[in-house]
Image (cartoon, rainbow, N blue to C red; front, side, top):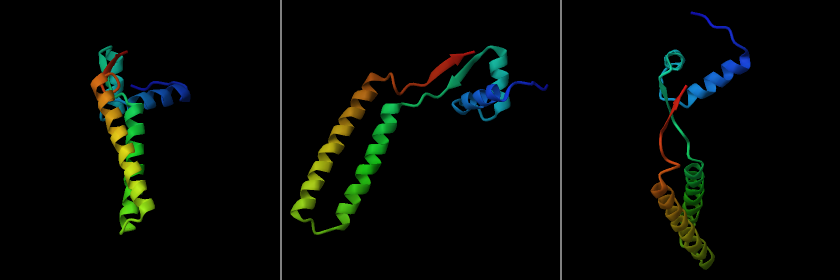
Length: 109
């Protein structure tokens, strides 16, 4: 079967498909056309921000580690970085406990 649609609609469909658990666009379209629920992945902005911050902190701590032995200034930097890491981990725990940002939802079309 062939379906004609505007490019903007096709791009929207492909974008939606990219957030699903389906391995092929055809499988996703069949599911949508049947009216059955479609499994969707939801990204957590908070978790993404945490990961970005953790990567940045890790890189900075690695750079400091390579500067051994640690000067007073670097030692203070490491202590401050460790405090930031601890803060971010606490924030992650709070987010995980809320469960709302880290769930997988279903979208019925």
